[in-house]
Length: 376
Image 1 (cartoon, rainbow, N blue to C red):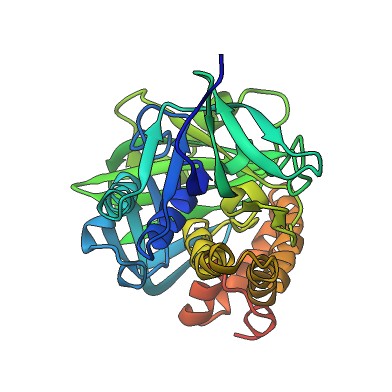
Image 2 (cartoon, rainbow, N blue to C red):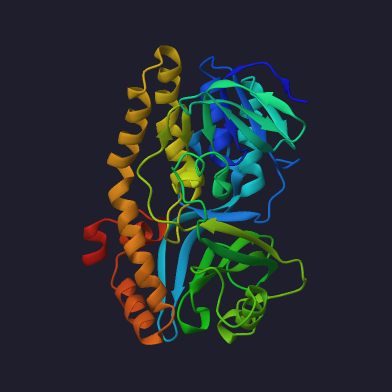
């Protein structure tokens, strides 16, 4: 039997960084927000850390989200090793989400963990009128915001996301670190075929060592088998000592760039509409930016019911990021070719060596302009 719950102004689907950020921004303006998250624990993750160039204060975070401050980064191909200096951060992912969740709670967001959507209701015109969870409870709202990540719970139903998107896969270990705690490492070339590797320091002589595949998985073996082979490379063993078997993993959608983010009263933010960068570098910063762009337009839509407000969100994101993301996608294809050929990888690494540290930082962070590509 289906029971109907209290109507909200906005129903946010997904309690990741996109959902938590847009939920607290809207609730802080007096909007009644309910957030549904399928996981029972919003602070349990497969990946514990992430590298980022975001400024914590810009998004209202405390400095507690910073696991370590970086002053340099080394980019390794087969024969070229490029060290560049500049500020970056390794973030404590759990602390990022904890602070966003606290903001949601302070602003009165109704957070329902362990709640997954099993069905939807629509009116004769196809407008979404409610979602039904696994307990048979119907949740209704005036606006539905899909922040469910690669699951794309609502956006794939409304043609905003591929029904069967491709995913990049990643695995990592927490290991003992032998290098300086303010230096991170990135690895590229045939030994990291179809992807790239990383070492991110955590402080206390610990680091995260990981591999991310730009394909579904490396050919001929499991991702874990390929990763274990990588961990035996001298360029890795010189920097880390693996002292446990607690492997972590996750997936990231790598579908084509999307430019349409709403259909009727359904809106997508974050990975549910591919707003994480398709290149290595930033994911969270771009998704936080997308939620920040969306929130005022969604609030305005609720105030006057004008779909032009949803179009303004779509237009502002496209004006800001569409060209950049298409550039990322082209570079992703080039990076995939380079990961299969050491000569090409070394050529790209040599090109990075010619860049000033500031330009290198832009390339790694995802802020890739044409001038950064072609000039030092």
